[in-house]
Image (tube, rainbow, N blue to C red; front, side, top):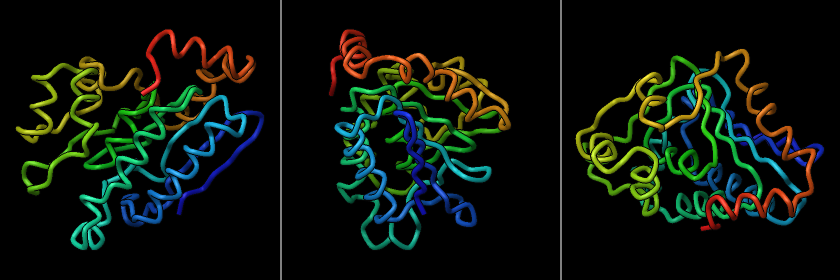
Length: 207
């Protein structure tokens, strides 16, 4: 349910479970983490994360969440693997981003979304803690008060507000989403991998 396409230094990882709002199982999260970890040493110069259908991801599969997935360390393994990558990472959010799926998007360098996207992380209502790295990454993007609005007050943020807050970097029509992501990756893909890694490290040391 995770499709990987790799060519000319670009890896596109697509969540393909649209009939379940791209909710994530442990196997899917492990596959994404494996791909992110492999990208650190396989010549990947840009990684794009996206989903199939009208939702990027609704978070954890409900059945697996009840069985313990909501607190499984695999979420943190995935976000840390993405954050540690020396290449350019882009979340191309084809729809709503919810719950634990926030982690992988927050760990990316750039976030694009479609106009219909909504953003919410209902850990307060559900009685779970967010994944360990998510609150700090969220606060670094949008500030502590707005992070508390999402994580504590249960706010649902629509795309224009997400753009104004800095949660996403651009709003792109659905038909152009992957093309826009590839365009942003074009200079990195044309460059030496070490050069791109050096510039990224100057902007933000690897975590």
